[in-house]
Image (cartoon, helix red, strand yellow):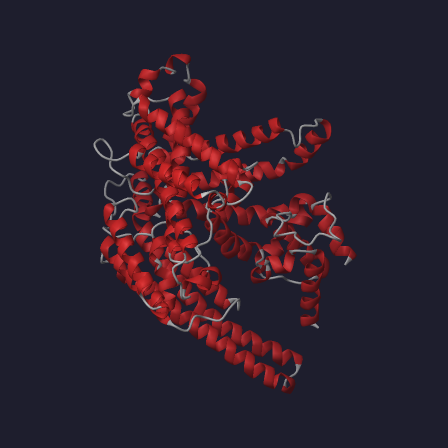
Amino acid sequence: MLFTSYAFLSFLLVVFIVYYLLPGRAQWSYLLLASYAFYYMCDPRYLIFIAITTVSTFFAAKVISDKKVAFDAWFKEHKKEYEKEERKALKSKEQSAEKKIFLACLLFNLGILAVTKYTNFTIANINSIISAFGSPSGISFVDLIIPMGISFYTFQSMGYLIDVYNGKFEAQKNLFKFALFVSFFPQLVQGPISRYADLSQTLFEEHRFNWRTVSFGLERILWGFFKKLVIADRILVAVKAIIASPDTYNGFYAFAGAMFYALELYADFTGGIDITIGVAETMGIKVTENFRRPYFSKNIKEYWNRWHITMGTWFTDYIFYPISASQFMMKLSKKSRVRLGNNLGKRVPVYLSSFIVWFTTGIWHGASWNFIVWGLGNFVVIMISQELEPFYRWFHSKVKVEGTFGWKLFRVVRTVLIMSSLRMFDCYRNVPLTFKMFGSIFSQSSLSQLNAEAFIGMGITGYDYAVVFVGMLVLVAVSLIQRSGSVRGKIAAKAAPVRFIIWYGLFMATVVFGAYGIGYSASQFIYNQF
Amino acid sequence: MNELLEILSDLHPEVDFTTEKGLVTGGILDSFDIVSLISEINEEFDVTISAAELTPENFDSAETIYALIKTKLDDED
């Protein structure tokens, strides 16, 4: 069910009204029903997958947590009866028992994710190898369903399991409350990947109708629709046209395509997240922010701290840190220091861990070499910028540009250009074509390509470009205002007529300039496929 | 404590680590810095810090990092 469909809006309206009519203690149970109903309406078969992940994670975490509590209590009472070495052995035995349950659950759930998402990709690669050896036959592809949002809810559940295993908090005792944490419908579609410690604070609480919270939520939803319908879906037509005909649209057009895609992806993904956060907010539930004006970042590292934040922190906390803090990496660090010297040697484990993280991030985004190369591209850029740091320090000691507007602007433009170039892997059908199209920007761009007719030929009109351009200016303006605090907070402080004009203006702009009707069909959110 | 301050200053010479209380929450130390730091700590103090201990609470100031190292050293005694 699309967020931008009438079916979703009707569903939301019913959920919202009944939510506030119910007694507070029944609200979370009702949300669980609504979430399962939502998922059922998307495809009834999805329910089996989410239920398996929910039940297996709930019980594994509960057993681990109960064991921890029982052991800690016993140990506290009896530790004086044992010598130091015996105490260590007891602790180690307990940890090993917990680890077995933990790993079984982790591998089981990641296994489901891997089988559903990567079986056909693996078969395709095996077939390529077979055909390289001259064999005409290959393995047939299998017809598997990929449940919507499986990456998001699996990662969210595994984050919870790891936190319980690490003793950050005790496991949830109520299966149905945990089921709601996994399936909460606004974030089931495309995240954010919430942490239990954050989301549980408001998810199971009783919420009474509060106009300020509800109006803030509605504003956020409307803002999400504006981004999605007025900007993303309108420019999407041109993006599709450019990537569909690489022979026609090369050179400057490929560059324009990358820029259009940067705008489309931003408006689409942040718009979807705005709707998610807004829907939750209308029901008094706080979902973690996923973006912090990423296109204003001064470098790629900062960009990844501000774009899809919950995914970045998930990979950092649950993959990057465990790998880089592992015994293996510590030993490698020591060895590489001896071999390569202290300065270079200490960076080896960091880069190796980072390489693994970016490879995983790439394949998480999609089962194709395009995404793997995209992930590794990010790794290479980050590594180069890390290695260039001494140069930057030297540069700034000689040239006093740090802090100037020109330098800040240069860094922002550089970040956008690098990220947009990398994202071309997202667009074109394979890796060689992407390199070819990137190369064409430098080898085939010509002034003759800069003609209005060619751009109109991409399926959208001058009017569309004007709407997108104005929409983009609104986006930039809102982002600039946001730097000094909540935009909705600022609107709320205005007099009633001003507030009304802003809300009405945004609503009408979305209705009048939104891309739907003949020639358009509200498209699926890009991140749904993950 | 002095050894730790030296390690930290090597990472970010421009920061006064004796007074700074928001190393992680203030965005001074990023994930690369933290990983370099724990490998240096492992080298200098011979203590192993696990991934679960890499939290802002443990790494927000030189004092909290030192407290973590001390706890680990005491644990091993």
